[in-house]
Length: 410
Ligand SMILES: Cc1cc2nc3c(=O)[nH]c(=O)nc-3n(C[C@H](O)[C@H](O)[C@H](O)COP(=O)(O)OP(=O)(O)OC[C@H]3O[C@@H](n4cnc5c(N)ncnc54)[C@H](O)[C@@H]3O)c2cc1C
Image 1: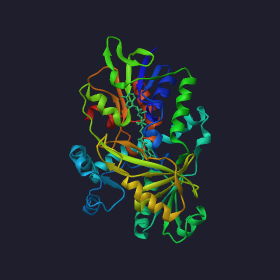
Image 2: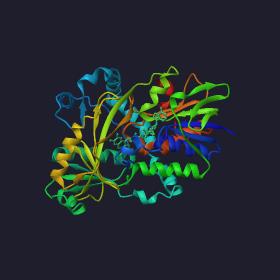
Image 3: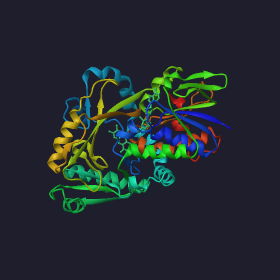
Image 4: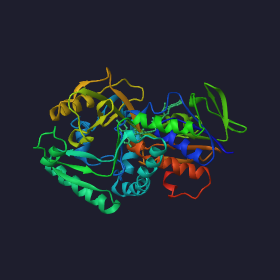
């Protein structure tokens, strides 16, 4: 029987373990924490079937000037951290020309196309339907010109990729969300995405399914990984384990481990914050306030506000400036109540410089596989890229052309 250690119990790692298990592999899933406690816990919980284009780096001078001078809440940066971001940002900028972004979109949209279907199977098998809403989410626009521009892009995405949306006037939005005032310019309602009331809970449910089907879940430190005569060895809380294959699915921590084996994979590390609010009003569906770059999602713990990207050091203390602005703006829309946690949560979107995940076999090590770098949509894409990687590892013909995701492109 083929064997694998999957490193990382986020959405990507747990889904990879399940897809290998389904193919008859003996799989041990290892994390230093419980599954689904890091990035896959703290996101906005949207399974984004509409996100057919990966996020490019803005290249127009007006937007860049706004970021540089702190006049947008989408991006915040710590000047002292910029030197460590400079290399990855330069590559990201280079890959964000319209032509290269078009190429990345073609490869990205192929994954997004079957992301929801892959979740659907796992949700049913994991009996996790109670966590899911299948009613889409909304993007609020406060500026009529921005709304018109967004509608044009949405129409293009509908034409090219079949994603469905509805434009809501201010009064239609207020009818859908009666707590909102009716004089806002309007919104786009993406109809196909699914939303999750407890993203970490969904990962836990998938991990419980993996264990129920006979998989082994262990605590351990990925940094103890070594190559051995039979393949790969790792120290865990249950002692040393061995397998013929290992999958690095450590989200934003993946490059750190791969560096030990001689691979340098640059990431643009976009930190995001969240906070829950209770005791006020809630929303029916998640709402993204586009002008202020934050999302409000009704979740089990209350309304969760998630922020845009912060460029800071990986171990830098929390500087939740964007959360402060988002919270103040959200309070202008509805009474969100009081903060639930004493401190904001934060985590890092693992964004590659060419906006595509790193998926496949490491070029210079037999049995070393990667599945990370899903950027802004790893919660959406986990099960989809898991299936693709499991097909590759199992020697099956792939359902999708996997060339653009190969690790040896770096
Ligand atoms: C604010 C915010 C909002 C977001 N909103 C969305 C959204 O709505 N929809 C969407 O699709 N995506 C969203 N994302 C992105 C998404 O959350 C990530 O892309 C995704 O969670 C990455 O999953 P992962 O499994 O690769 O990483 P993770 O979930 O971070 O998992 C990595 C795992 O590796 C483990 N680990 C790390 N180091 C070690 C070690 N040395 N030894 C053992 N284990 C280790 C960690 O404990 C962790 O469990 C958002 C992200 C943020 C920050």
